[in-house]
Amino acid sequence: QGWGKEASDAYKASQNGGHLGFTWSIPKGTVDAIVKWQYTETVAADYGVMLEFYPIGGPKVAEIGPKATAYKHRDAKWILHYKHQWRPGDAQAFTVMMAHHANLVRDLDTALPCAAFYNYLDNTLSCAADNDAWLAAHFSDVPRMKQIKTENDPSGLFRSRLPSSRALASPS
Picture 1 (cartoon, helix red, strand yellow):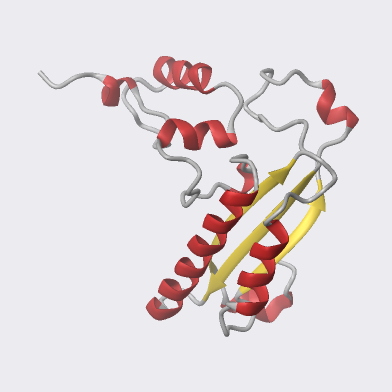
Picture 2: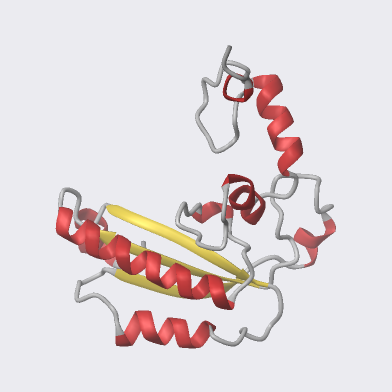
């Protein structure tokens, strides 16, 4: 993604994440985390770490009600997208990249709201203490999503962070 053919052909294993911002100013601590993990304590790997800011949302997105769809953060102004990638099968690179990713996310979680972009679902959000908090960081109406999952997938055929009715049933 964005690094040309060499990178896209070789570095197919990755971990993405994205924090959202709700004002046009960058919260205190965000720049410090970026400088620390992108420049001071970065990993020595070609095409290994990507960080990019880009605007998101706008008046048309904001016109849709906050609970009309699963997309929660219609009032977000920007996203900080981060990606770590490595060659598939490289266990050492996997370990290094995932540790770097977890450290970056931990520092961003202390500076930014616990609000994540669902195109970059990230299981490592340290700000989400449990599964419901993780779901709430990404989606607008978690109880409604759980109800839809229970009604439409009672046997749990489709795996997700939403529990199926089978998972909710108590053992006999």
